[in-house]
Structures are given as C-alpha cells and as structure tokens.
Length: 238
Length: 123
Image 1 (tube, each protein chain N blue to C red):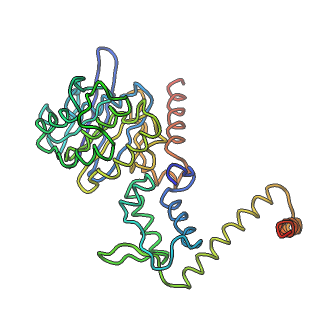
Image 2: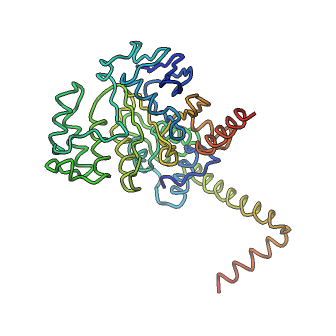
Image 3: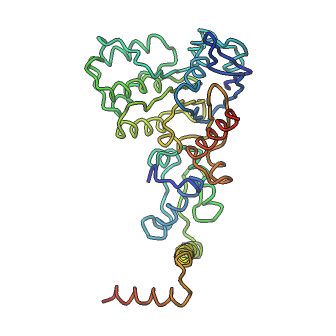
C-alpha cells in the first residue's frame, strides 16, 4: 500500500494551496508533514482522504485515484471538532463502527480504558483534552492501511500529548499502516518519525530521514526546518 | 528518558548509550532480557524502527544477543562488559579533558585540579 501524489496543484480562487507537489509514502513508516500554519499541510491530507480534489495532477491511494470511496482505506483525524455534542462517547464509538467496516470495537474499548474515557459521558461534557483523546481513539480503532492525523496535539496539555504519543506507539500497526502526521509542533513528534517532509507556501522544500539528518548534518528536524525555511525566504526575496 | 535527545546525535545511538550505561552501572545485569522493541518504543516515546536499529547496533557491538523467538538479552560475556565499561570511562575522560582544554588549563593543572578535588571529597 502506497500513497502517491503526482504533480498536484490545488488552487482556491487565485491562491495556491499546493504548487505542483509530488510525494510518495510507503507502508510501515511514519511521516511528519511539517510547516507553519497555512503552508498546505491540511490540504494535502484532505486530498489523500478524498475530501478535496486537486485542480491538476493525480492523488492515488494503493494505485487507485482517490474518490469519496477512499475513506474505506484511509482513517483521518481532522483538526476540527466533528462530534455530535449530544452523543455519548459510547454512541460515538457505535456510530463509527456502523460506518467503517475496518473499525475494531475491541480495540476501541481498550483505547477508551487506556485514555480513561467514560463511555457514558456526553461529548459536550468532555474537556478539550478528552475530546482530543476521543478523536484519536476513533482514528486508531480503524484498521485502515492509511492513517492521517491532522494536528493531533493542537491545544492539548503536555499530559495529554504524552498519552497520545504512547497510544500511537502502542496501537499503530507498523507492519501494515502508512501514517502521516501533519503538525507544526515538531518537538513532540520528532522521535516518532521516520521521515520529515517540510512544506512551505504550498511547496515541498525538503524531505529527509530523521536519523540520517542527525547523523550526516547534526541537525534536529526543527533546526533543519528553520534553516530550510530561512533559505527559501532568502531566495524568494532576491 | 523521552524527549531529552540532543539534536546533534542520532536517536538510536543516544538510546544505545543510555542502555550501555545502565548495563555498566548494574541496573541491567548480564543475561537480563531487554524490553521488546515495541515496549521499549512506548517507554521511550520513540519510533520502533529506531529502537530496532539501537538493538541491531548493540548486537553488532556484542553487548546484547538476540535469541530467536525469545527476545534480546544482555550478553554474559564478561570481557565484552569490561570493555564496555572502560570505553565509557574513556568517553568521560575525553569530554573532561576537552572541557578543561577549552578553559585553557594545561595537563599539569588538570591533574592538580583533579587531585585537589578528590582530596577535598575524601575529607
């Protein structure tokens, strides 16, 4: 299972969200899609999920061009809140189980215990941290070949972040899944990543293996990202 | 240990260093089983591929042994453990000497300084 973007451009009116982007993602790796706000990270994930179509170019999941059917193969954690406030946690889990064939209810039950979430609580009674945890429970309970996480840490305190990192490591199926995490909070996830991809103003300005980067250039991902962006801005200003 | 990684060194080496010093300090004994790759990944908040690399590297150095179907164990070869300890000693001395040089001390001054420090500590 691979995810492939070939010469993908996305325009919103006159603005470019992505400019002629080509990327490929392999099974068994965790990718970080990194860059500042508004760089095109979310658009990229939405295109892989089949929620947004490219203006030109091709997006393929497992050699099939994406469509609304792609959601069968792709689990997508959005940065937005997408819950029904009057649902209980349990009902939300049941709803997901009814929508996705690959939803593993047993795994969901285990994740709820790990995350200390109460099935009987209503979504509207949950704290922001617990809503963030619930989103992750729903995404990780699917046994989909592709897992997309859009800003899984955003606005969450360090304790919640820690529990999210631990559940990712516990529940990702490293033999079978391709995982792409879009975030601008790089310190949190650097040790989790195999590959880091820097996206800036809709353009891919670099892709590196995280350990090779340290080994060959003595740089952490954050340091590399800052220098790559500074370099790009310098070129654009010339 | 999670998140306290230096940026200049690969993470798999930093974890190997950490495990090596645990072994030398006796926190992990000869013949003891290491956590599985997945367990270690969860404990340290690190990608399992990285941990796998740590274990392979330590195996290459002879510090650990992988037994098929059983897991990874600290070696029982005493010579290897002795060598590991003296290698860590050399590393520490190396960084001490380097720091002292950076401060502008001569070799004699380093030795006198160290002797004085040890005498004071004994008292």
